Image (cartoon, rainbow, N blue to C red; front, side, top):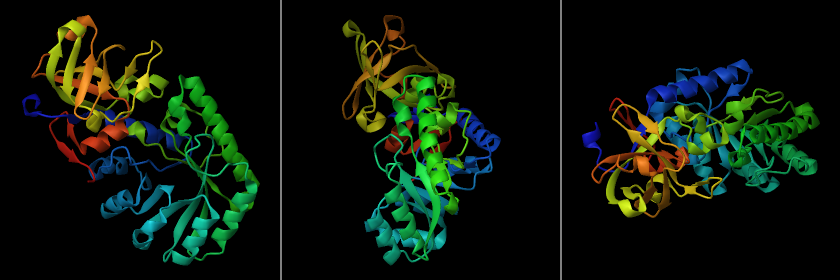
Length: 363
């Protein structure tokens, strides 16, 4: 297999991936939660089937295009966890006529548009901002929320389901305790809304991977939508959401040049492969990916300090500790553990499993 790798290739450890899926499915079952995993991380019909084998029937996606792709592959219960783009109403109507489709709203204006333009029934979640400050309504704005619920109920096509949030600010946590504090604060806000609007029997949908991975109290929640857990990555390992041994993907890159005097190698693997997401260690070092040694059967992650320290379009600059420098030479291969596996997968567009199978993704 190694001799056939000529350019950046995303390697997938199927056993680790299946173990991660099983772990989260069993956790949801233990807490009596609907498990609606986010498929934006893997974006693959084949990997989606691995979820079916664990009893998953409902999924989350991040775009209309992704919903179309998975609908074509037999998924019938899909939530598009992204604010509605009203310019895609034709495609939204086509999907709503084919599958059980759930949409996110966060303004009366969008609800008004759907009232006059939605041609098939769709479930509606109100997006709540519990601290990420990316999108969603302030949970304290009960007047706005009530106004939106009333507008939803005036339509015979919209079915109010409940409240949805993504506490993505857990990704910036430094440790497990920080994650649990954010999880508790976010869930408390959502449960407050559940109580305030109890007459509508709203579902509470939450979904960040750090919280879903380590929390053991989901009181008041009805549904979880984690996505990154299927592969995990160095960002998750740094926050304590997973162990390095749970990370299921590695980007295999050719080494193209070496500079012993500065203890650096150059790899064919840059921003268009790894993305520009990074983590900054306490010593000030910025990493765009952790280095690992790959022997054809598994990869061994090297200690902190062995990192991709700079990326441009195609280039990656790798800084290595002296004891590991000679492990790599031009013409050889180097494994990079992604900082953010979702973006790396999206950039590469396919996987190579350890047993040599190529798994495609949506294009």
